[in-house]
Image (cartoon, rainbow, N blue to C red; front, top):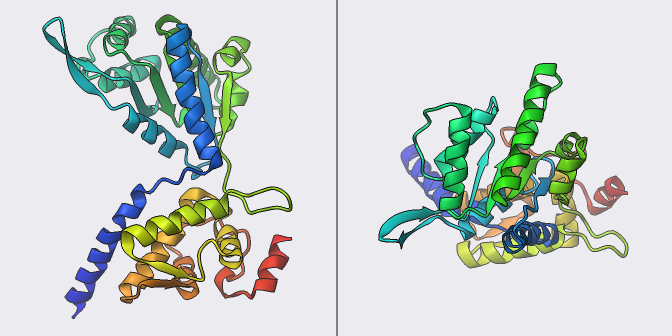
Length: 318
């Protein structure tokens, strides 16, 4: 019996694994996606590097945007002058730690299919510039870029050297570079006016928001898209609907609008319903999911959000 329960649990987890791949294009997300793409296209057409910063706290979708762009510009092979060559229009990776110019150059070379890491920093830099041209790269996205900054004097000098190296790389190759990370990146980079000019496109991703007076929020459209996707792919519905006024407020309070936590809460709630052989996800499923201490959310109150009455929810939000 225990084995059967475990098998059913694993099956439900496998069924819902597709939900991890769902990407909702809410307004801030779409704007960032379009802007980074435009920087890449303009850099190529105008033969000058137009860089961008993609900023936001953890869990708002920065890495998701980068991975989506990378998937749109996948590497491919072609025949040129009777030789097969690799084309890498765009690539993305989290910056290596500890970060140095040499470690960054090696990581970029790996993205371009080069596994030969021998030589000095100067030799690696030369090899990198040759390959970037050969691979016709137009966009480089560096995630977790805030990790290069530290309070120590030695790290500060390294950070300055790395930032200047990236600036020179962009100038010499005319490639658009997108630096991704926490908002502190902007403060550190923009101390240097030359860097500020090269990364003039600043994109801020914020947590999802509720409707406020005459201002439309981003959470309810996000939940509507999610509900449609879940109904289509998993034959699951919600009662009440996740985009209803009451439940959307509770989800917001439980997650502070952070996209990653919203999806984690919905995922676990759906799993609860499937584990009970139900096709309707209830408020109690959300309560059970939220009560799991092993899952991390960003609640705005210590109260049991999914057991409060609607007037109590409204009172907390005021």
